[in-house]
Image 1 (cartoon, rainbow, N blue to C red):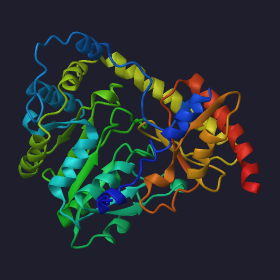
Image 2 (image 1 turned 90 degrees about the vertical axis):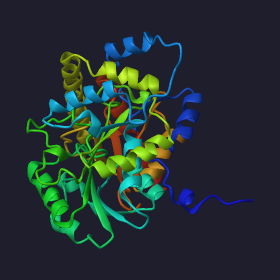
Image 3 (image 1 turned 135 degrees about the vertical axis):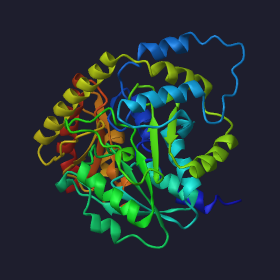
Image 4 (image 1 turned 180 degrees about the vertical axis):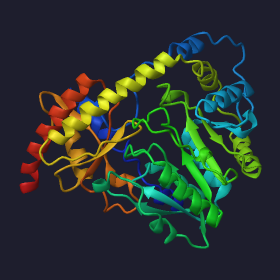
Length: 400
């Protein structure tokens, strides 16, 4: 029998989705599963986007240009201006979600064997896309005791070798919710400038910053304009993950030309998704404010609730809608599977993402989980009760 490729063997399983079969079996048994494992907002998609979907009136569902409709890119450029990000429509390439933007960025900027430095814990698909590009992730590990703050800049510089091509950050961060400060961003800028590296900056969660301090984009950093590759998506800010519309934004013309070759190979980004995304760019600010306030309340409710459970600790995330929590357990992968296969409380259980999948070295994060506060406070209240009861029961399992 033919063997799958080494690349296929090396690709990591998603820590977010790999437990879905167990969740499906739990639901088949009649157990209610609270999904805290995935960043799928439960808030309604903006009405302007839904109306655009309902009113699609085309006799042919045609290809779009490989870089996306110009009208959508023009609206995106206007959106970025609200955050003092000055880019033109020609510097924006529409992609099939933020994930494709990361993949195309890596394929266009990295050769097999090239290295990128990534603060961890990090979004698991970064490693997957690096493997697909033949690149190597060099992790700089942050720790929960420091609230997952950026490690000292010396830790980055120690990893730089002749094969180092870039630094990748996610700001605000998935999975930790950490928000980089101006000082930290300037330190990254100085390294990028000193060694002439790419700065891949995933800024999907820019609408979710809770500190009151100004949001710092990679495009706000002076002197590295040609080095920055920004990754974006409409999925989270408009609660429309399923339309699969993202963007790769860069002022580097050579990178854009390379990315366009990959875009042409996949023909075009989703037609219907672009129609919905373009309409969603006109979402009223009232919607965005209501959504923001809702996540602020959920964040406080969840973090307070977690830290009241004996043995549980979560720092306060300053962005996105995730937190990484430390639990009094021996193995988060085993615990998360056990929650779905062997535990229920009053007919309910919770689904969490084991944090080991967000580290390159899988022995790290063994007692940590990522939790997404994308459910209502009522559901979060029930989920916290279930989690507390589960941890009580699991102590007995560990003692056996």
